[in-house]
Length: 493
Image (cartoon, rainbow, N blue to C red; front, side, top):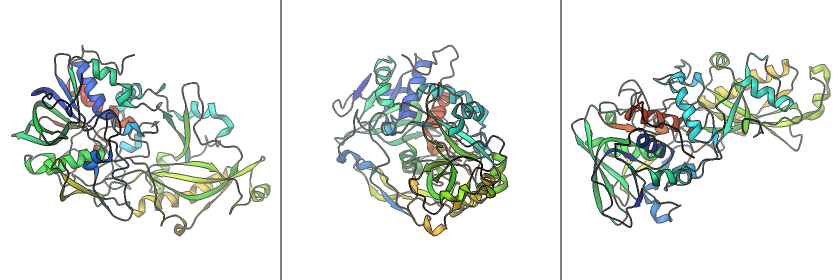
């Protein structure tokens, strides 16, 4: 059932088996998965907002400061109502690449303490939750289907194609509202703001909840999952670090550090074959979008993180004349040529100096406000841009075209494009010195506190995070409720 604490101040249950904080994709998936697996358990999902976008006054908790080279839209990048940021999500989906999970000596602090293979079955579950028609991302069959609309680079030792798929996009609050209403052992409490954890040794004993009218209540829980989004999860954990056991992951020196977002720049232009379509395309298995990327061995040899680029046709010849391509002595293949801009999505490397901290100011619920100091390592995009020279040489050797890399002054001073993907500030690691949660997403040194959020990502690739967030949430639910005989379908209907 779904209840609104703003209208029913005494509606919060006194205790439950699992209490999940946050009603975005991670929280909704975790709540429904646990409730289905264990019908004998009571599950409570706390959502700070209601069913729709709240008035500005109810966004007080999201007010914070932003410092650093580039200001960050703390309020505009988050939504405080059921479904969370899935309510403005574009639906882009793809798993992280296998190499994104590996420790890469040339990418500082890279590596996940779990492998791509361990997460693979949960990506399949996540695809069902996100309503994606296929889990096929292999280059060869998808590239063959697109034919001449993409570059013929199958023989390249440097370049490859990778693919995005698309959710409708699923608005989790609307799409799964009926399931949330009908689950007999699940209570969703709207306008219920988790503000504090109470502890009994290494266990969380209760969650304190604040209402909009200033009232407070407690709910005792056997297991607690923090799923408040990449920024708010970190803020909540930082606010509770002082009362947590000294041995817990909330005392980790990495809590709040390594905040990251995917960022984009447009550092090059090219003359390439006409009518290339690096955009959303129809496919029998559902819409796909090709991007150019480096093969894993090329990333290592060039010392760059994972990135992708798309080609955007330009209406005017600009700095690269199309007449240039008519000179067959330069090695161009026969056919027409267009001018394109190259748009990058870069993988940020984990940077401990990019961080979330608390301030002395408090919101209306008494929780300290945050300040975000978002920092991009200059090497993150310089290595990628430097690799463009190799990419240009490769395109030339294949007779496909020519590439011009802009001077850094033409793009580096501009505000980079933002993914609004909040990652890394409660990272996963093998111990509390390296991170906040263990490979099972349990906070180090605690018995029953878990995190379901992109905040736990220790490395980032270039893929949008929602599919991985949902995969981790489904995996966490199976660990909390490991009953193999229970219903575990991704969704109903």
